[in-house]
Amino acid sequence: MANKTLVISDVHGNREALQAVLEQEPLFDDLVFLGDAASPGPQPSATIGLLKTLPGIHICGNHDLELLDPSLTDNWPVPWKALNDWDRKSLSSEDFEYLKNLEPDGSYSIGGRDLFLCHGNLLRHPRHVLPTSACEDFQALGAQDDSDIVLFGHSHVQFAQRIGTQLFANPGSVGQNRCGKPVACYGVLENGEFYHRHVEYDTSPLLDAIYSIDELNEFPNFRDWFAESLTSGFGLGKTKPWTDLAAEGYM
Image (spheres, helix red, strand yellow):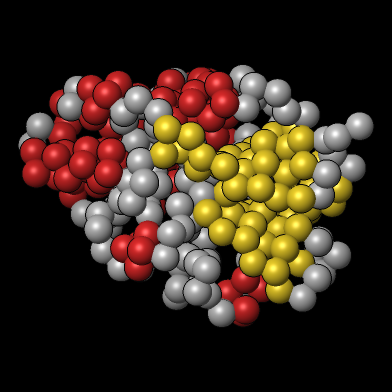
């Protein structure tokens, strides 16, 4: 019998996008979430509430750690810190319990296959593993040689690359795409083959949520930029390398 694993990553407090993915993929046997659940985003608690209903392996991302440890954002630009602080204040004790129970990077057995799962952030420069990255950047993710499939997120770009006997696959970002297409990106692992997929979603509730955050009233230019970034598909703005990757057709 076929086994289907839904692979999602980098939701970043965008419940609308996550709901769209689940509506497009209502049937799956296993689920992998590769981290960054709620921050920085406008629907943090609602997003975690939906993630909590999804049984599977949920990996911890760098932004999940930042919600758990406020000191990690002390040097952030002031508007970003205000948004992250609001995210933190919006979470319930049950939401924090979910974050505390997220799993570390490592080898996991899913659907009868041994996979290496990690969020994908490198603790050095470059921070992101991209389609243009050197082999040593992929190797720095920490996968063991016996993991034939390595799933990772963090860079918000859909791509897969084979290095030796290992397939490195990034499902892209559900909630904050960076390649100029306002869609929710994800992946499906079926019978040992990885497939990239995406779905459009209604961004109007997302915009309503952004403009209802009182803590951002002090930063109207940032709020407008953030809203335009999320709805344009350039989650960090129209800057390199994201514009170059968009021009090459990456999602």
